[in-house]
Amino acid sequence: MKHAAREQAGPEQAGPEQAGPEKAEAEKAEAEKAEAEPTDAAAAGFPMRARRGVHLQIALSTLLGLDDRPATLPALGPIPASRARPLVAAQHRAPWRYALTGPDGRLLRAGALRTRPALSDLDRTARVATDQGAPGLVDLLVDADLLARFAAPGPDLPGSWRPVLTEILAARGRPLDDDPGARFPHTGLRRHVEFRDRHCTFLGCLTPARNADLDHTRDHARGGPTTAADLGPACRHDHGLKHRGWTLTQPEPGIFVWRSPLGRVHRTRAEPLLPPPPPPLPVPSEDDQCCADDGTDQSEDHPDPPLIVWRPPTPVEEPRPPAPPPITDLDEPPPF
Image 1 (cartoon, rainbow, N blue to C red):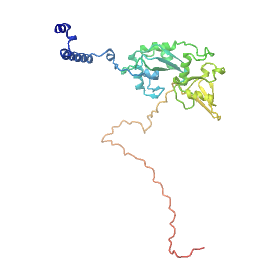
Image 2: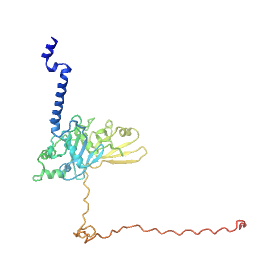
Image 3: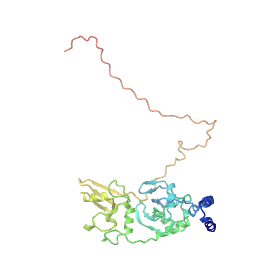
Image 4: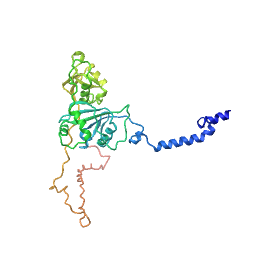
């Protein structure tokens, strides 16, 4: 009876002695098939293990390939544009924000972005997708003059970027200072202050504004309004300095004046979000014989001119003081 029941059960319920070799062969075949046939993520060019995203700030002109301005990791520092473009492509599904800047590179207005350019218009070499649980954050820094130029008909612009720029042009968010009596700022006001000040406003503190308290320069309990002109990021340590003898004022939005208990004044202001690029390197003129190329072939018939090596002149030795006269008689009485 047991033998008949085992035969009717088939190979799946057979004992380990009979199903062992067949089961091992089946598992080996499934493993080889899984290695030969990539999954959806691998077919899309992404590895199976996603990494955590980062907070990245990059200029629109850099993503469009107009320049190679370094991007910024607010928690670390600048990174080359060649490394920043793949990061933006990897964080294509992460939250995006924009910051519109003026000619001096300082913030005009900011907001959230809902549209994205196509991956093919970002970076074709990106093969790493960020984790959906920690996708990171992308801040797109947009120069107002560049935006106006691309908004006009005619400029050569990838098609997937045009809806993004249209959203920035048509953005009409909530007014920043519409509720000065509120205890806490709304999302748009908080975003504006974080973009404007970037770090803790105390002297030398590099705590990112996202990780700091949004402090009222004039305390809210003493009538301070919840406006852009009375808010600034302060880390937890420096926030407490106001209760230990330090005073803080904000004469203009984004300019902070700290006064120590001894009366010393420290004035701080964040660097521009998008500073003007450095001037180009000077190009030697054709009349400059030092750097101009005369077009002659430097071969055996035209040997290189002798190399002149400059050496500093040998310093002149100062005359040594005369040697003292020799002592002839040690038993001679002293002259006094």
